Image 1: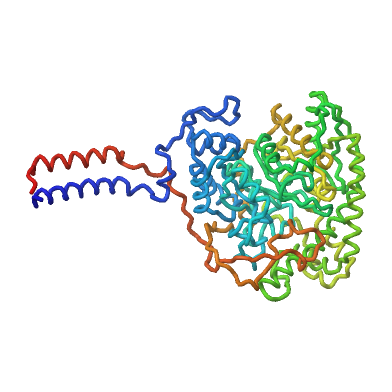
Image 2: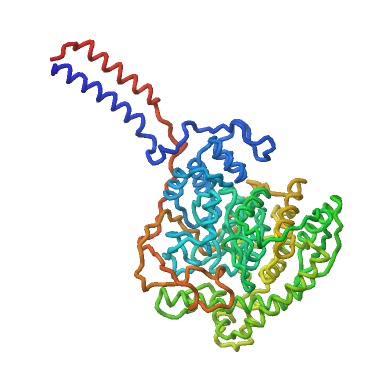
Amino acid sequence: MNTKFFKKTIQLVGISVGIFIGAWLPFDSSSAATAPEQTTFLLEQSSENSPFLPSSDSTLQQLYTHSSALELANMVRTKQVSSAELVAVALQQVRQENPQLNAVITLRETAALKEANELEDHGQPFLGVPLLLKGLGQTLKGESNTNGLIFSKDQLAGGTSSFVKGLQEAGFILIGQTNFPELGYKNITDSPLYGPTHNPWNHAYQAGGSSGGAGASVAAGMVPIASGSDAGGSIRIPASWTGTIGLKPSRGVLIGNSAAERGQAVHFALTKTMQDTETLFHALKIPERLQTDPTPLKNLKIGYSTKSPVGTPVSSEAIQAVENAVTFLRTQGFEVEEVNNPIDGVALMKNYYTIASSSASIANFLANQKLKRNLIIEDVDLLTWALYQTGTTITKEQVNAAWEENGRMAALMGEFHQTYPLFLTPTTAWPAPKVGDSLLTAEHVEKMNHITDLSAEERQQLIYDQWLPALTLSPFTQQMNLTGEAAISLPTHLTAEGLPLGIQFNAAKGQDERLIQMGKLFEEEGQFKQTVSPDNSKEDHEESQTTTTTPAIELPVDPPVEEVPAANLAPIAPLEALPAGSNPESTERVSIKTKDTPLSTETRLPKTHEKEFLFDPILLGLLFIFSSLYCLKKEPELN
């Protein structure tokens, strides 16, 4: 070959390759496989009836935050957008909103993008839609499973729960986990491990608990659906305070939910739309455990009450929310009657606290597994310590008696629903409290710090007394967990201060469909109030920061996984998934994984929309061809 020609060719090829590299280098290779080619994603045609359909110049991020989960799934299925693109936007939303809210505690960026790219369409209703998983009681293999305990901050789950598998089979891509209070004991989210979660409507206020991170993440547009669990109102309370929809299903009607008569915790989700709620319920339901009733909704008599079942005061805003709903129902042709709750609420709450205290030994069990010693007061939140110490004085006979009385109360509610198939109350009696308010008095704090000095009876009374300020905010939710009935919180009211407040409908066990249909009626008739005001959300945020002593955490991403020796065993299920009153030592044990490396302080989102490449690859190919022709013209002789 002619040496001169060879050198010239090599030179020009090098120039072409150099241009190619220079053009593509600014583009992040980690997202090259999934990034769209334009910074503005145009919706071709989604649904003519979509209430979230944006204008033609909306960005993909705007489209994502204003769409329901089903609308996003339809876009993935019709290839208007890829699941990986939705995941990238969801991660960006988390990074944008979470510094102010502290709703998300972990992200699984690499794994989520991989799962999105490998996703196949098998008719899943939520094909490729990003979802945030509650960090408590909903385990995903290899992901954080701390139960909110500081001494378990590095603990990872050794397996995936059946409920989480159900979410994955429904098509969701799990992108991370949401915040919760330690062991899920509170109606606010103020975790000593993770810090408090702020309300998107006003950052000075709480988002509720224990699924507070879930409620805040949906209200802030991070995801259209976030999973939650509910052992005493933990889905419905955050739903009430964040302007989202919170269905607490009947006991045992969904996969991954115990049907045991002594099971009080259920798993489901917080959503933005009733269609998403209904579709997810149907995707997870166990049909034989549900009741079917052909009675038209408007033929059902509705009872309502605004009285607290434990005799505590109810705010005028909560009363107004119910009265507005009653007026609406009557205009729709329903027969609505004010009634008294047939249940003794004080007795019910004493049973609730007996069961909660008896279950608190899980904290000591986990301390023995991790620390090789018994629990001490410095290890846990003060409430956890008080419950644990009270639980040491509670007998098996007391727990059995509590559940037997709950069974009688469930029978009373069954009779009540024969006359009033639906029962309307406030979801919460008051709007959300301020961030930094522990809902404890100084007197109770002092007694809890010295609870070991008290008798068994004094400890049990202290548990009731110290919880009363929190119970005053949300006295309407616990009953359904102990009776096993269904309930739903609907976002129908805004207070004069611009804070959401929900109303609650309750139905007999297995009659969940009635609640879904009622929710759809309220939504279709424009009764929902779900728009977060950007100006209002920032109000008093500085004040809320000054009352908070625990800083928000940095998000760990894709933690390394190492197997722990088989001797290190612990229950995979935290308190909300543990059968109430059971002995932790008798629960199923599984291998736990842990990580030894510190939490990552740097998280990177694939730069899907940040930089565009400079040249089209076709033009680069043409450039290479012309350079070759030029060489041939100048050096035509070949040896």
